[in-house]
Each structure stands twice: as C-alpha cells, then as structure tokens.
Amino acid sequence: MDNGNHDGPGDYWDPLPTARRLLIEHPYLDQFDGLWEERNWRNVPGPFYGAQTDSMQMGRHDAPFHLAYDDAHGPLAGMEFVYRQPVGPSQTFDLLNGCFFGHGGFAMDGDEHWSVPAVREWWQERGRVREWAFGVSDRWSRVRGEYRVHFRDAAQGLRDSAAYLDHGLEEYLRRYLFWLAERRPRRTGESLPLLERPRSGTTGQPAAATPGGGVSAAAAPVPAPGTAKPLLAGYFVAVPERMTGPGAPSGAERLTTASDCLIDRLPQDGCWFDTAQEALEACAPLRGLEEAYVYAMLVPADHTAGVVADIRAAATYEPVLLTHLDGRVGKEDGHGDRTTIPQLAEGGREIGWEVLGYDYGLLHTWLCNDLHQDAVRSLGVVTDERGLLPSRDAAERVAAWANTLGDTKPVTWFPAALIEWDIPVESRFVPITTGAPQLPPQQPWWDRLVRRARPTSRGPARQAPSPTAVLGRSTSEEFAGRAESS
Image (cartoon, rainbow, N blue to C red):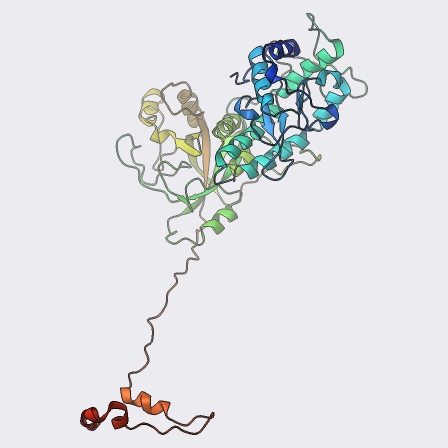
C-alpha cells in the first residue's frame, strides 16, 4: 500500500491510462457508475470522485490515504469521498480497491467536468470542507463502545484530509490546472498557474516562483532561527515533585514539567485547558490542592508543525493542543472571519524551558528518556532545581541534538516554555457526613400494650388488658414481681 507521502513526478501524472488497464485486468473492480450531478462536495478536484456510494464505510481498508467518510446519513454514518487523487500506479491500484468496497457510486470522469475556473472556485471555498472535517472528526473521536476502532480511523481520515488541504493539495491542483488547460506536460520554462483568482492588472503568474512552487523569500520572509513567537499550547494543573534516582538532574527539588511521565497532573493525566479559569474550576472538587499550581505551555511557532504531525499520527483526542497549535488561529475561516488567537493570562511568570515529545497521547520529557546525562556531557547544558533549562537557546540546542539521535522515543522533540501562576488552586471539596442514628428511648414492654389501649379521636377507648390476661395465669406472679421492682 502506497502511503501517499510523496507528490509524484514534477508534472501532473494522469492516472486514467493505468486505471483503465487495471480494470481490464481486474474487471470486478469496476464500480464506477457515479454521476457528476450527485458528486459529493467534499471530493477534491481531479479525475476520481465519490457520488452516491453506500454507507458501509469500508473503502479506507484499502485506500486510507485517498478515501474518507462523511456524515450524510446521520452523526455516525455516511458515504465515501476522495480527499487525495492518486499520483502513481500503486496509489491508483489502492484507490480502485477502495472504491470496490463502495459498491458503486464512484466515478473517474472528473476531467470531463472540471475546468480552470471551477477548480479555482472550489479552492476558494475549501475552508468549508476544512471546518466540516474538524467538526466531525472531533465528534467521531469521542465514540466509545463496540465501534470505537472504526470511528477512530474515520476521524483520522478527516484529519488527514484537512492536513492535505493545508500541505500538498495546492501544488497538486496547480499541476492539474495546467493539465486541464493544455492536456500535455509542461515544457521547459513554463510556469504553473496560480490557484487564486488573478486580480486586475496582474497576469495570474507568480511574481517569483521557487522550485517548490511557492513565492520567493522576499514575498514571505522566514523568521530567523530561535526568533519565532511562542504560541500558547494550553493550561494544566500539576504539583511539583522531587525527582530522585539514576539519571535525575542534580538538585531537582521541585521538578516541574508538562509531561505526565514524572509528575501528577490534575484532575487527571493528560488534561489540557483552554483558559486558566477552566483549569481552576476543573480541580475545585478535589481535595489536597495546597501544593498545586496552574501552568501554561508555550511552543515556538517554528516547532508547532512537528508537534501537530505527531498528534495527528497518533489519532488521539487532543482538542486543546490541536486548536491552539495547528495553524488555524489568527487565520480566516470558511466564512471570512478570523479565528481568535489565544492570549496568555496576566500575572504569570516564565520559570524555564524544557524539551518534550508527543507520543500517542503522552508528552515525554527528555528527563525520562536517558537524554539528560548525555546532553550534559555533549552540550554542557545545566538544569535548575525544577529540572528546567534556563533559556530558549539551550532548549533549542537540546531538541535539535535529540532529533538527530536514533535511539530515543519515536517523537519529534521540541522546546517549550513553562509559565507559572501564584493563583491558589482552591478546593471546594466538602465531605459528605451523616450523624449516628438516634434510637428511641427504651420503655417497659408492658407500657406499649397499655398505650395501644388509650382512647383516640376515632372511637371509644379500648379496655386495657390486664397483665394477667395478656400473659396468662401461669405468668401473673412473675409480672407482679417485675412491677414491684420497677
């Protein structure tokens, strides 16, 4: 199976000759009876698309890097669509096999319908697809029970489609535009057309094209290393701990880290919050918060891509980290509005830097991966009583060094700053207590019999039975003895 992690040849590669040959060799794969008028609006432009496919959602078993599912038939059911076109023979074969499990409803005549203006119009509206994909993937990630594995994969497909919208699809569509206009490969010196609609007074060609198809450095300046602004990743609550044992940093009396490996997070490991207030409220029902503090983690903007890639590869539920770091904040959404950039709460102070890596729902720290002693020897870095590095430069050097090693956790190591607040994490825990049951006062057993015979409002008084009548003659003398003693 081709994982789709390459862009194929430098020019547009036409998959239809290969697809036709494969359908002759494997006629059972021909499930291409879909109609353009019924095309799913989520399909990316290209020759292949899904229309009215079935709702069994099986295509990703063979083509996970090309097919994803929608929610057209309800919150947990839908049809299939193509989010990445094939750019090689093996990818084409994967896609044909995936379409086979759609039991009809796919088509491969997109070239006959797409035009240059139509592709550009779809590109202008791509935010609609992206917004929908993130919303549904968030819902599907929460599914539990018998079908949890299926919906985790379905959610991953939508996250992959959104990631491809941001990184990869633009270059493919520019090549596809040239193919639609010319129906031939590019000649030497010919430029690719732009996807954005040309403005008046422009030619529609890039002002300074680079080999990768982007604009020149003058048009899009790149920050110098170590100067990109740190972005707020999220808030958490933790209790600093003392770290001891082999490999522990010397003097780590109040170890502080965003990793769950070495300290306890509250109210449970892996908890991230959008705001400091949310973090405080989440911990309020707990007891024993005297040593707990609110923290924030900041990640330099030039390192967020690696973090986000590891989160998406893990297919874990991380709404806070993804929302803050995946590049959507501050940009226009599908409705022309700009998303809000999370702002750091006032009153916090930077306490140091650490080096972390995301691995399937868990943040590893360099302190728990036998990296600390080697880094001290190789780089000469020093940590403080919290186990933190004193500067961003030191954390950048450790992260870059760790990413060159081949014997660490399979993560992308990144630098992160920690911010601490002196805000007390107050507990509203109230233990539930009950008093001891109050027993009624003890009374002589014969008094109960007498009270039963007292007059009530419902009728005349009953004649109280004599002790002799109740007990019988054989016990009358015993009763009289008890009465005298009382």
